[in-house]
Amino acid sequence: MASSTAYPPTAPAAPVTATVPRHRGDVELAFLPFQAAPDAPAAGEPLFEIHKRYFGEATARQIASDTTLGAADGLELNLRPAMFTHTFDAHRLLAQAAAQGRGEPMAERLFRAYFTDGLCLSDRPTLARLAAETGVVMDDTGADELRAALVRVRTPGIDAEEAYAAALDENHNGPNTTHGR
Image 1 (cartoon, helix red, strand yellow):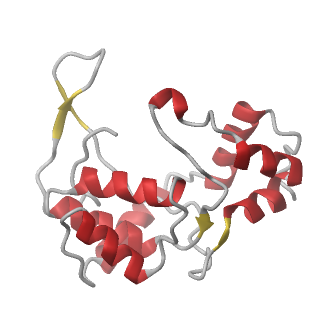
Image 2 (cartoon, rainbow, N blue to C red):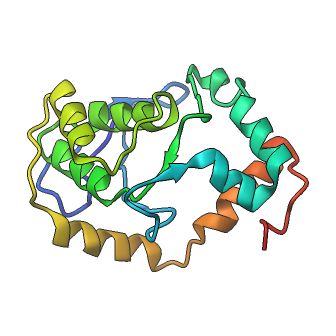
């Protein structure tokens, strides 16, 4: 995964630079907060069930069993146990990690926790364990700043459901282009 800068943009952390293959010089990359489903339940629901509801069972099974997703980039994705959940606290943890100079390892650990390990990213004890694993001090600060950053990234009108559905259609030729609605 690439290097990250302060997250959200208002967090008091210096940018991290990296040399990117096929480019000369350094670039700055930033992880910006974006909740695909801000109304998702904190208790979570298996991602398979979400896919089944939106795209049909055949496509959900195809996604869950597809071991090629991410493989070209060296990623191990295991979507079968993934838990679709509210991610506000995970985003806040990432902001705190970036402020502590640990944004990139925290982002990598959160992505692995979700996409490979099937951990519930709304579970506070799970987040505390992930923070400890990556050397991040977690606390209850930053909620107002994160809410403001989430508003800023939503302002351009990005529709996460449509973007996700388009990506699935492109990668899987999923039969349900009406997204279950």
